[in-house]
Length: 190
Image (cartoon, rainbow, N blue to C red):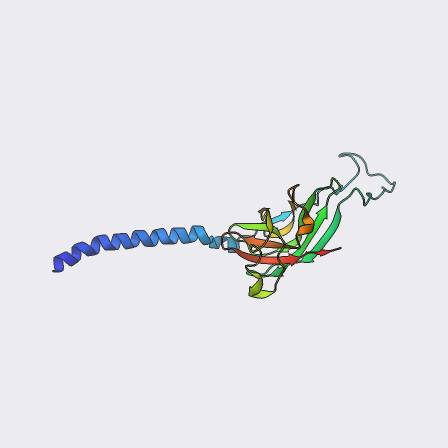
């Protein structure tokens, strides 16, 4: 009897170890816990805003330059403040029409946690405080504007040309892996 038990224990231990190592590897891949300690800051200028009218290498002029025409420059159509959901999140969200008629969602002074598979979503869902707002953004109409470029900073996300922004009223920093909002902002027309 003792001999049979010894033979079964060896292979069983190996199987348990293989399953445990595989489980740990899968868990690390799925949750990516190291991202909680990695910040990525992205600072993008708003497209279509000219920083300087002087050509590169030209001497500065003493003449005042005319301000850009509001009709041709970027115009903020709606804005809102990010609130926290699954993770502490802050910053300002703006829906901006550029001079060429295209639209961008602009995140300014974003500060949130990093995480696996974070996206920026333009949605029609209402923004709710607390746990009630964590899972509502995939219930209705939404457009993924792409992966979050960085968890800190100011960034732009272009709307596809076929998307009419008037049908959407909120923006979510969405974790696609776990179907949860890190934070969201209600867009109020300006």
